[in-house]
Image (cartoon, rainbow, N blue to C red):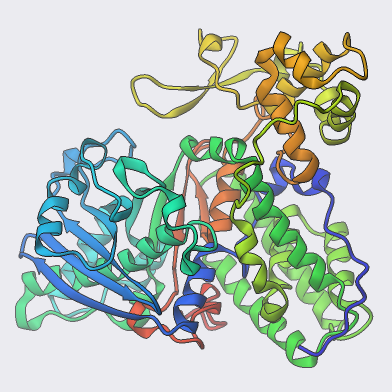
Length: 564
């Protein structure tokens, strides 16, 4: 990369970036966790094998998939089940699934598999140990699964339009890690280079799960059709990802992990700022951007949703892409700060969905400039949540004014501004968002409205002298500890807070879900309501045995002819 840097473009203002509507318009980029994983696997020449595939004609059994890197081997242990239709549910309270998995640290022995077989299929009702790094489960997309088995068993390939309309054969309903169900705590593996970026163990589990799903569909077709059956064609297999159904349970994560949220956003914003600061671009870099833009047009064309909000956003996005195409026709993208000029133009002309897509896309030609940011997306500051009690009341109030101006200006007595309350359902054991003035839920409210809570703390601070330490204030008002902690975190982590009201009447929870899933690397966001959505992971990616440095990164973009 031979372009010059002018070092004058700062990161975008948190007040712009951290609004819910913009977070809900984010797209995957080079720093997304799935792509970080596949790049590493390829660049370090990891090898893959399937030492065990013991599944009967009914689709019941287990399989083991290994991934071996420079220092360690990890194994996906998969259990396949014959699930009655009436027991199939994507809810977190389900008790049975079509398949269950654990990512095992090392290669499991027969005794390990026997032990896991009595626990992993039961998920929350079972227990694993520190040799398990994640525990997960998945359900079939029933109609597509049946169609594909029927076609392949007869020696035919499935209908490509039916395959494309769904995009996956199985969808995960949870991928647990970090000590859940007895699995290894994150701290025990955080110092391993392969896990220096966030959620890499979970992404590896999903990557290997996709190979298991492909092998299962071929196995079931052979069991049904025998010698006349066909293997799933490679081009169709490549187009299949792993689906995921995500609901309100993921939304509190972003609020409850402010440092992690800051690091995710800050890394992407730093990458964007670095590229915007280039005075010039090489012709090859501009050409790569143009070719990927053409592939993005294909990706957007195949993006389907039945939700009115996303339908409207897709209409606007397609119009945005037409405007970008016209812009590119009049600019060679090589001189006079081309990427900064492009983003200034997008901010004036495109929707937020279009702006964020182009902001992600300008990073693609510059892996050597931005890829080093991925380790910084982890949270390496265990002391960040420690309250600085010696800070003065005056300094604390100043931090509140600087980081929470909108919250301090909000009229929290107006019902529309505090219409909702977050709580945990006793029956379903899931986070819920209820109507504060219609349901008796206020006493069960979770602290998931940082803006309101900081405003309440600010009001109570008004009667305190400027020089008093905030520790004295908290001795008298311990109910504000979580707010003071967040204010101090925000002072050194400016992207740690959502700059919007998370309990107002018109808040869209799916905006939070969309941001987190985009950071994972998901595509084809399909809201099913304002509170849950479906997405696809690793769609168009190479399978483990095909992975090379040449195909390990840009797989997320289908080629301009629409093939994977």
